[in-house]
Image 1 (cartoon, rainbow, N blue to C red):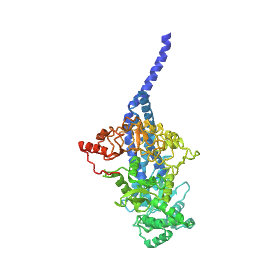
Image 2: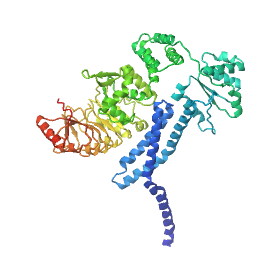
Image 3: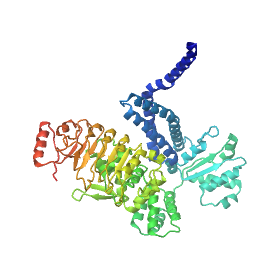
Image 4: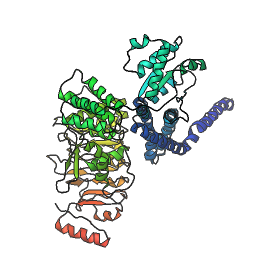
Length: 619
C-alpha cells in the first residue's frame, strides 16, 4: 500500500525534473552561444544607429532603438563580468537571468533592426536618379496596422530626404476624396505663395496644370497616404509630370543684405549666419534661412533673443557628427575649463567615436581635430598656451551652455537634478536608464555627506561614466556601494573631498580611466587608499592622489596586473611598489613624485631595464 501510494508522487517528480532539465538547465549551457549571437546583432544595430544619429533621423524612433541597444550592452556586460563568480549557485542564477533577458530582448532587437533597414532602403530608392525622365514612384504597402504611415513619416523626416528635395506635401486619399480636392491639397503644400482660398477657387484643370508647373521647376516629394487601389492612383497620377531640368534663380546678394539687416549688427549673429550660408548654394535655401529667422524675430527686438534664434539656427545647421560633441560640453559646470585629454577619455568611453589610428598625443590631438569646426565658428572658446599656441582647454560661454542644456533636454539626453532640493528625487526608472552621471557643486553646500551619495549609487546600476568633481563640502568616506557599479568605465573624484576610499573598488574591473586626485579633508592630510588597483586589469589611465596612505602602512600599492596601463600619474616610491613598473609593458607616460635620492634609483632602474625617458620635467 505504501509503495502504491508513493509511485504517483515519484512519477510526478520525474516528470517535473525532466521538464526542469529541458526548460531550465540545458538552456543555461547555451547562454554562451546566445550571448555571442546577441553581440553580433548588437554590433550590427550599433553601426546602423551610429549612422542614424549622425544623420539626425527621427528622434523618437532612434531614442527607442538606443534604449534597446543599451539593454543589449547591459546583458553582455553582466555576462562578461559575472559569469566567473566562485559561488556556483550565484553563477547559475546570473546565467538564468541572462538567458531570460536575452529571450525578452530578441523581439525588440529584431523590430529595431528591421525598422532601420526599411527606412534606409526607401531613402536610397527615393534619392537614386530615375532611368527615364518620368517622376520617380516608391510604394509602401502591406496589411492594416503594419506601420506603413509611421515608416513614411520617418522617411519624410530623414535628413538626406530633407536636403534632397525642395518642397514637400503630405496628402491623404480618404474615402470620398476627389481628384480635385487631393490636387488642391498638394498644391497648397508645394506652393507657399498661394493661399488656400485662391487654390480652392480654381477649376480642376487649372489646379493640375499649376501643380505640374511647380514640379517642373522645383524638386518635390509628395507622400500619398491611404491609396487603396490602382484606380485611386490612376485618378491622381496625371498631376505628376515628366521631369525636366530645374530652373536656376538669382538674387543672392539681395537676400544676403536682408539677412545682414536681420542680424542687427551683432558680430556673433553675423558670423554664425555666414557659416550657415556658406554650406548652402541656392537662392531658395538662402530665402528659407531668412524666412525662418524673420518669422521668429517678427515680434522680438532684443539682442539676446536675436542671438538665441541665430544659435538655434546654427545648431540645426551643424554637421550631425558635431551635435553630440557640442551637447556633451554643456554637461560641464558653468565656466569649466575642459581639457582635450579629458574629453578624449570621456568620448571614447561613451563611444561617440573611436580613433581610426593611434596618434602620438592622441588625447589632445584627436579632440582638437574633432572640435576645430566648432572653434572656428566661435561656438566653443579655447585657452591657448602662449609659447606654443597649442590649445590647453575648451569652454562654453554661459549663453551657449544654456542652449546646449536646453537642446539636450529636448532630445532626452540630459536631466539636471538639484540635490540640494529634497522635492526632486531621482526616480528608480530614470536612474536605471542613466549611463553617465556628473556630480558637481556650483557653490559650497553644507550638510552633504557620502552616505547620501551611496543611496544614489544603488539606484544607478548601469552607469558607464561617473564624474564627481569639485565637491569641496561633502563629508565622510566614499560608500562601499560604489563597488556595485561594475559596468563603470570612467570614474573620477578629482578635487572632491574624500577621507577614505573603500575596498569595494576591487569590483570595478571594467574601469579604464580612474582619477583619484582628491582633495584631502582638514582633519586628514592624506586620503586612505586600499591596495586593490591591481584588480582593474583593463585600466589604461590612472591618476593617483598626490598625498595618500595605504590601509596598511607597511604595505605598498601593487600594479603588476595592469598590462594595459598607458598613463600613470603621481607614482611615489614610498607608497608604491617600484619593481611593478617593469610589469607595465604598455606604459607611455609616467609622472613620479620623488626626492633627489629616489631619482637616482629611478635612473638606475630605467638603465637596467633599457627604459628611455624622452622628457623629464621637474616641479
